[in-house]
Amino acid sequence: MDADTTRQRIDAAWRERYGQGAAPEALPWNDTIALLMRHHSVRAYKPDPVPEGTLPLLVAAAQSAATSSNMQTWSVVAVSDPGTRAKLAAIAANQKHVEQCPLFLVFLADLSRAGRIGERIGQPMENLPYFETFLVASIDAALAAQNAVVAAESLGLSTLYIGALRNDPEGVATALGLPPGAMGVFGLCVGYADRDVPAGIRPRLPQAAVFHDERYDAGVDADLLASYDATFEGSRHGGGGSWTDRVRNRLGRISQLAGRDGLKPALRRMGFPLK
Ligand SMILES: Cc1cc2nc3c(=O)[nH]c(=O)nc-3n(C[C@H](O)[C@H](O)[C@H](O)COP(=O)(O)O)c2cc1C
Image (cartoon, rainbow, N blue to C red):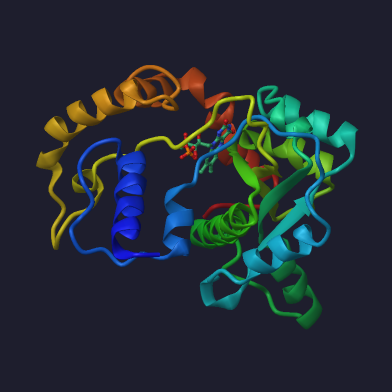
């Protein structure tokens, strides 16, 4: 590809990702970066199955992510059974794609394996009950899942995280037969996008809002957010309304937590003391 074409692609990708502004003059570029910048969630899937071998490949990609102290405190459950899918969809506020997508994965923060190791070797695992260890497991699960997302998208598949499984973590645990110390942090739909249903890139905040040089600058927000609101509202795939409206809707009222305000006691009942 000649330099002009590459530059045009960079500019187009930048415009889509940010909806405004221009890409820096000098920018390293390759297919991996282009893939990452094209990411968008998909909420409608064709019934076509994913190609054979996709599942072990996604798991291998997930297992290739960094993991705290190589403890690998996560697991993943693939759910095909229609009855179980229906239960999970109901927990996730009836999101139809949970039942519709050909492959549905539930990523777990999983301290149960370490607990079993402790029992086997007769070592009380003093650190397991701490909030820090739960956080480690949740971060591990998220990093693993994101590797699976990138791998899936590199194969032409689309994805959607389903955080709404946390509306009822105990319901998820019952549906999947999880042991104490394992929690579904989110689901992941994988499949071929139904192109009849519009989906596309959602512009992100200007870099200056999220990137700070040396010291955090809380003073940059107001102007940047006003321009981002306008960009977001005008974008085809923003989902309607300004970004500030979305944040207000999501964080402004307790009802939007859809039961997740009870997450801490639920986790404690599930074997995470969160000390
Ligand atoms: C952990 C996590 C949980 C999410 N849960 C849901 C969900 O339950 N339902 C949904 O439609 N989208 C969900 N999303 C997708 C986000 O809404 C989406 O990533 C965001 O709007 C940005 O859009 P994009 O992924 O197309 O760039 C989730 C994303 C993440 C990272």
